[in-house]
Every structure is written in C-alpha cells, then in structure tokens.
Amino acid sequence: MKFNKILVVLFGLFLINSVTLFAQRKEMTQEEWQSEMNRLTERKATLVAELNTLKSDVASLKKTKDAMQTFDACMDELYALVGATKADVDNFRKQLNVLSGKIDGQEAPKADRQAELDAMKKNKISALPEFFNKVHDQLQRKLDAWVVAPTEIAYTVVKGDHLWGIAKKAEHYNNPFAWPNIYKANRDQIKNPDLIYPKQTFKIPNLTEEEKSQYDKIRRNYKPAPPTQTAN
Image 1 (cartoon, rainbow, N blue to C red):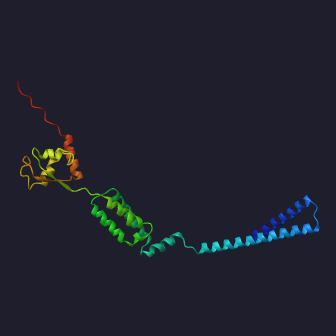
Image 2 (cartoon, rainbow, N blue to C red):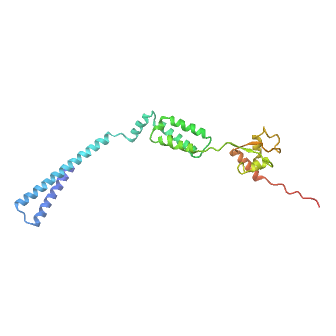
Image 3 (tube, rainbow, N blue to C red):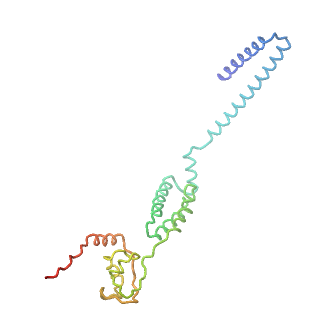
C-alpha cells in the first residue's frame, strides 16, 4: 500500500509538471488541454497495469520459492533413491578418493585394484551423478591402460656367462651384487653358483623394493681389495 501511494504521488507530480511544461511552451486551448490529460490518463492506466503485472509475478515467484525444498532436503531425497544416507555417500566418496589415488599411482597388485573398483561399481551409490562417470568409465580406463611388468623373465646362458655378469646386465638388475637372487630362484638347476652352463635357462625374478635397496647399499659400500704387490 505504501508503495502504491508513492507511485500515485510521483505520477501526480509528473502529470502537473508535464501539463505545466506543455502550457509554458504554448498557450493551450481547452481541446488541447483535454487531449493532453487524456494521453496522460492513458499512460497512468498503462503504468498501473504494468505494476499489477509485476506484483502478480513477484507473488508467483514467492509462492514457487516457498514450495521449493532446501538443497539438503533435495540431496537427501536423491540419496534415498539409492537407499543411502548422507553418511553412506560421504564414506563412499572417501573410499573412491583412496582407490583413485592407488590407481593413479599404479599401486600393485593391479588385480586387487580391479577387485576394489568392481565392488564400488556394484554399490548403488555409484549410480549417483557425482560418481557414475568416474567409477564406471574413468577409473576403468586407467586400469585398462595399466601395463603390468612381468614378475620374471627368462634368460638362456651363453658361453662365458656367470651369475655376476648376468645380474650386471642393464635389462636384468644393472647390479652385479644382486646375483644371489638369480641363484636362489634357480636352485633346481644351479648346484654351485660358480658353475653354470650354456643353454641353461634361468628365471630372472623382479627385485622387491627392499631387495633393490639392500643390493644398492652393498654396491655403494663395496671397496675393491688393493692390488697385490710382488716382492722384489
């Protein structure tokens, strides 16, 4: 109501000012004055109609707003569709972040990561828009692209070979001090580590991180014996 009164006052001032300015420009006849009043009255009616329309729109928007759910209520309703609570979804999100980190870092074994992802795919929470693409597409693509190095390779002995030299090869351990690893993996063929024979095929297993560290330390600490001096 207060707004309407202000509008009427403003329109009245506008009307008086318009008529006064018009009258100042030229002397008005009665017909001209009446025509101007009619025009302004029509303008007033148009403005009032527009105001009423705006008031109706505002009332409609307010009604719509009052009928809308809060964000939290909407999310709870969405979670209910997959039989979950907010706590369930929060826990799923944490598990997914952990698994994503393992896959990105290629934390072996790959089979375990695939099993974890498969379990998350079976969880209905994975159908939520927040998770669907990552669980059912992105992470599976990363797993598919993850090439697992063989746990061991085969090597056929040639003339002149010895375990020290085989371990020293760059394609094997690049560290001759790791020769005991080859010896232990092939005890069924090697009776004496100083005696190996051409055409024997040995398994060259991968070194664990602990073994790599152990043999690297041995190599760093190795000090060759000084050359033997002959007596004059």
